[in-house]
Length: 353
Image (cartoon, rainbow, N blue to C red):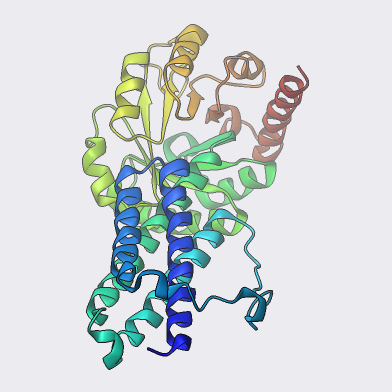
């Protein structure tokens, strides 16, 4: 067999193995996803097993000193998503090269082209799954700062999209749409507009309760209550990169939510809330208990304003949600800006200490 052919196979096997190892480690250590990690590991082992048939003959033609391709690689990847895509494509391209070479008569007795084709198509699927999961993780990490809930009932005849734009200009990091008294058609139209504006502004957009509207509007996620659809069912229907938040009042509910797949929990209500007067306040003690209990982000909601937001942040909450403290004010943008300043001041002080 020509040594040049063996060099091509050897070079591409190295690319495949290195790329798969990177993807496997992302799945294992970054995403803690045992299933994805196991699948990638199995493909890597399959490649090794098939190429071990060549024995030492595969590496004997190696010559890094004379390889004209050494030092010509170019990398522009700047984040984990780009690195995942670069390594997945590296694996896909390497598998394609070996797949084509396996059609040669002198190689077809040892390698089956169809085996490498099957692995290549498997990597296409796993690549998409990895990117979706990495994107979801990045969304979870963005659950910080001020979380503004646009409750159409509280807002009244006001324009929800315009109100959201003001909140975003003020510094809101997350916008949730809650519109239980609106028609589904009207709410969907509103959600689509909000989703587009939030996307352009780099702000997370969450839909309250309605799974169909969250999916149709391509929202970043959905927020549900204790009496809504089970988390497992929601997760099956949502795109993999979408996040799920669940309202809780106790540490036990928060633990259960995390175990069942919630990406964050919202502790409600911390203080008596004008938008939900029937909700029993859990107080700062209840908020602290939840924060100590779970490892996922905790959002505080209910009766939070400029006067008490410092106390809430001292409990270690990851994000603070407001309705009346924002939309009960004449100047929405200014109200948001003042709350954001309080959050930033508290964050800076905690970093110093």
